[in-house]
Image (cartoon, rainbow, N blue to C red; front, side, top):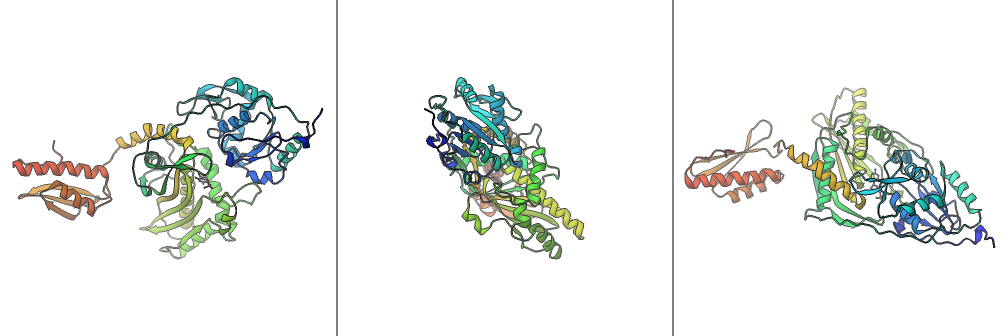
Length: 498
Ligand SMILES: O=c1ccn([C@H]2C[C@H](O)[C@@H](COP(=O)(O)O)O2)c(=O)[nH]1
């Protein structure tokens, strides 16, 4: 007997990320890439598709997607929407297409984990626990096509839906998964401050801080993340062309950033299936060009504390996918233009470096426009980001560990002993230890402490300058102990002598 399409009644059973998927009863899976899945679902009926889901990243998304397809062998057709600039940037759909076109080989992920590497110029990994014969079977059994627009998705899904029901290609297959649970050190949860010269350096410190002390929590996306709340990052000296380390350990490169900057600085039309762009929110969404507004504001009132741009629309509560970047504030102090950005939710591994570079480009643009249009030739000041949920998704933990091992260790070796709390000169005067605190620049004496007990002195200094670097206060403790010994023995004390 030949079954008709209408009679099809399969149930897609997602083993992974169930809350991220729209499930139906058909035999066609739709990979929406970066196009919002609900924009596709509303044009289809549930018997026409098996599942609709996003694919944001080749290294993070494809393995879960394939695990789900192996668990649902009734999916015999795939429509892969590879249509937007974001899809081109991320490369997830292209890499998935390469899996079907060119297959996979045994290899290693960039963290050195054994995995199946997709035969593609875009790095994409599949968990090694999945058996190779099953992957081949999947490649042979699923008919796939690439499309460029929502309209084409709908046409293709409907045409596959008209075919007769095809038998599942096999039994549902489930493969084991290795789980990594990190050790978390105790630490403050709220309000961290991290400073670095470049975005790359600051990023390494951020990753270290979250990875070692972040709270492990559910993400809201069927997984876990480590999170700190209200993490402030201060980048003091990012050069105008951006600093990319050599070899580049950042999750973005200059080609990506060149494209990405436009999403922040330039206006963009409202398109179906595209959530928003920051440029659109800043330039036109609220009926005003806010970037122009702040340029004018600062030119007319350079001391203004109200050079604000807002990206959050009160209507954002009505739909999912609201902007992560919410509020920008520019400020001129000592002829220096700083930019502060509030980001409500921030993927610190994959997104923060690009977010920071995009914001730095906007800061530079505003500085340059002010210089062109007025007599103010401002210096570029720090870029400050406040990430409210500063998180690391569980699928980046391994990379984070590697980064800490290689790059954080290097940073720690490169200490310059500069402490904004100043320097401390220790001497013995009469029968007391005397400590003079001087400014870090000119060396002016700003405070004086005296006494005989090292611990009491350390406590006084720490209470008076609570921002002192931890290593610096440790060093003072050791020196003060040496000075106290000298007081007892009568031997001379000389700071820093062995
Ligand atoms: O510019 C961006 C856009 C998105 N995200 C991350 C933050 C979250 O991990 C995820 C968005 O999820 P929601 O907070 O919207 O659920 O993407 C960023 O870090 N920066």
